[in-house]
Length: 359
Ligand code: NAD
Image 1 (cartoon, protein in one colour):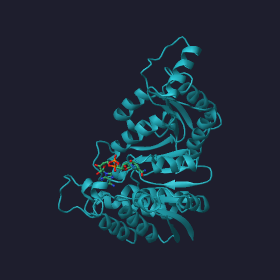
Image 2 (cartoon, rainbow, N blue to C red):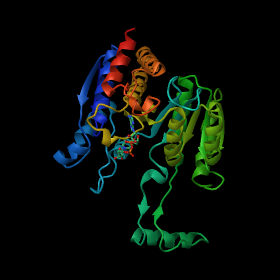
Image 3 (cartoon, rainbow, N blue to C red):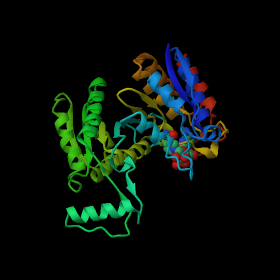
Image 4 (spheres, rainbow, N blue to C red):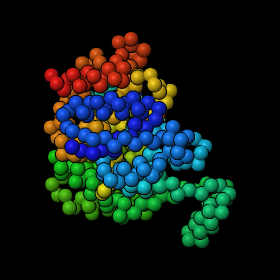
């Protein structure tokens, strides 16, 4: 019996979470769900969208699966999702992108896994507003320590990349490669221009790669990587990237395999892991039992693998693949036209996956 923190989230989150919970239980693996609400409604009731009890539950159970959570606008709270990753130090964001036959895509043989660093880089949130004391201080420091000037009317975002942060994400990528019998890790950067941040990322990537002689290593400059992914995605296997490039390339890769409805993810730290789809809360469809539960269900497949339940994970993945291949019981976004009257509901697609597991 696994005790897992279950966070339904808000918007369409509760609908896809319920579908995912039912499908996971249908694998036969025994779960005890520690239900923890977070997000918009919780903000109105408890004054914060991320109460301490949610963090405590994840720390205790070590594993969580969550629906998407809307970022409250104009309340002073940062994204719940970013706060969770930072507070629990979930430093690696793992996003597999593989083609499922039947999904609407231009490519048919993609099998990529993206390792995005989750705690540093321009995404770390260290910023100084135009005309603030902080911005003025940074501008004068830069003038003092370099020959360069920055315009006084600039806003500033800082890009820290450390040896510590890089080493652990690159090592996570190689360890995953080894455990999953993958062939190659590509480190992605812009070291030719940002020599001391991306340059360090590349240097540390090369050092870590020496510990894994059984796995091929290469590096690619980010702009070239984007072109290569569009032209010859089949040449790539595991990509490891700093936070911002990882954010952008994950969506690019999701687009290569059929869009957000099919893109699962995991945020993994040394203590805890939180599994969630790449997409957001799609609030305009809230309560309509309409959106695609597949990305969250596939995040559940990742969770099963993380728990060591490989056979159940394979069975669920195969059942989901069959439903997508047949193209009958899939939601509107996977149909040839979005207003197809034969589109399945969220719960209907989950029912079809459950039925395929028992076939
Ligand atoms: P979104 O991912 O919610 O929606 C983008 C587009 O994709 C929309 O057209 C939506 O209808 C469609 N879409 C998304 N998920 C789908 C699904 N499962 N099935 C079918 N179609 C789907 O992105 P957004 O509109 O930019 O964000 C909405 C809210 O979600 C924002 O508040 C944002 O901050 C939040 N968000 C949360 C997470 C998270 O919880 N990890 C991630 C991204 C965005």
